[in-house]
Length: 247
Image (cartoon, rainbow, N blue to C red; front, side):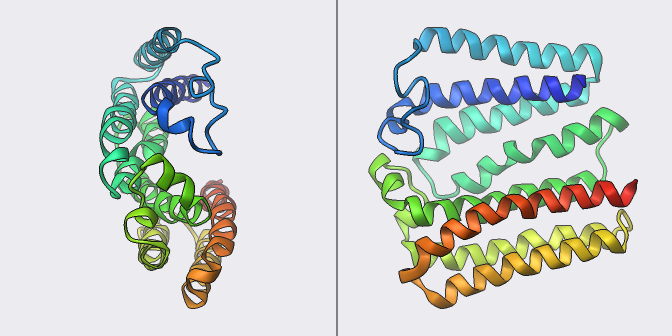
């Protein structure tokens, strides 16, 4: 309970500061223009105070009720999301998606460290999966929201190199994403039930990415929307199946 609550506070803090940094570009994107700071419903000072209180509460709660390692991992996730991703890479480099994925994957390490007090191969494999997962996930989003990213000046691959390059990179990242899910079985951390789920789920997602590549730019937006929303149940299936397998 404390781990989930403290992690939630840390995530909330990072999102408050992300919206402080991105309020100008959020205001010109349809997907984000109704966010509180972009819509000017709350003050920047109030948001900064709120985000700071959330962050300090997250760190303090982890330190008090869990352990030092989890508290430091929460801080690491915050640092990757706020100064590294939001303040620096998001406006300067197409690598922002991959590097920013580190913060999104941090809960896999936090949960393991909370129970064991250390980090091992298993959480690192799940962490790697989550980091890479965010590339095909957000690249798919950019295929049908490309004009918004272009208008906001965000150097996503679709803006810098076009939809065809985005599709090609999605294929590479999907193969890299599937690898750690299969390695989890090879490492002896999960059984055949999990393996079947990982293989089928990964195979179906890969088939969609291949189909998108074969159909090309004309159908990129169509496949982008389908792959974006299907990436959620695929990710959920990986984590649920590994828990069920262990139980």
